Length: 139
Image (cartoon, rainbow, N blue to C red; front, side):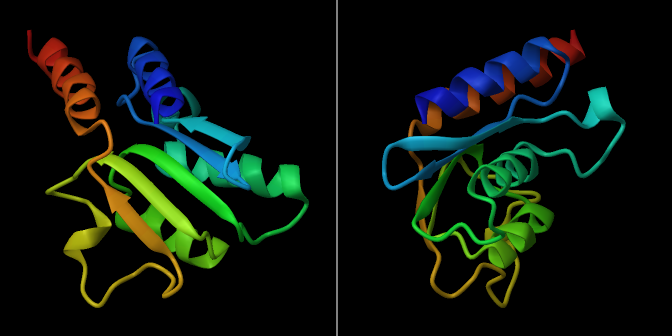
């Protein structure tokens, strides 16, 4: 998660909403990285998770992310959760919950039935990056 936090900080410094994501295969090998790039690319779909998924599938040369874990600083939105569903990723680990747009607000569950979720990892750090970014926009 600390590597995802580093990506989130970089995104915030670039004027993007500070979210970072990495995809890990086999428990230790990073095969995909992403940070929000919606402003830079003028693309509402350029979320950290989507960029990390794309990088990981290109690395593997396959569309499924079996035996992979996504670490992301903010709970994925519904769009990203849909992409994660289709990728059949094994596990999602996120830091801060998203009480407005997070996938957990949707019923029935949107993730693939075999995907496990771990939440609250480095939650305070993940929340502070976001809070500080939005506080900076308001001042």
